[in-house]
Image (cartoon, rainbow, N blue to C red; front, side):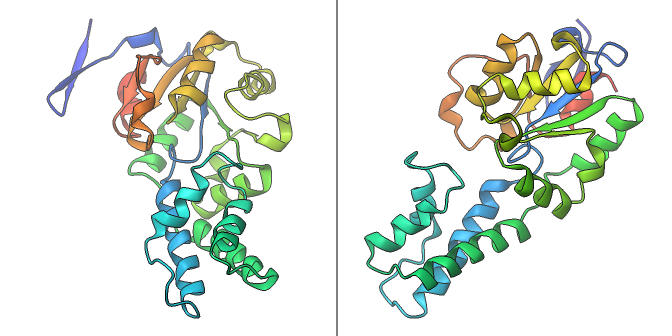
Length: 245
């Protein structure tokens, strides 16, 4: 097996036998795969606490306290109800403060998005190879377009599959099947790149797609119990090593 040296680790060059010519499409998750979404959310939480702390001295300055509400699983990961609960449990809720906190959250979350290193040049290279590129995300279409526009990546992608387009969220297979139908590609001709084992890697493999685990963006390391992916990306640009591009 041919290998290449990178960071003192051998990376197999023919894993999954994915090569230009047989690979026709790459389906990318968006948040924490193309850019650091968690970091942006934490900044947004910090700005919310700064706002409500101006009139409430006892408010914690630790953004992880508010961020923890988004992790509970009571509502969706992006649901404003998490902010409502935080305010109500501290007896700080008013319609005005809630509305303002939601505005701060959306503004700061978007403004603080930063691409991971190597994303733009890697996508440039993939486009040069004629590979079709798609986004498959659990965000709704409006938010997905806003984020891609903010980081100036919108023009790179041939297709966007968002939650409000399919009526489902990953790991439901419909996100992946929708993309394959729209692009006219077969599972064996396609690769999924994502940061979640459960929501990206496992459903994609069940459908017969190749999988690249974006470990650099996975903030849930406990998920990785078994090797449920074809290969691991330690950086976004590692993708080029595996594709021999």
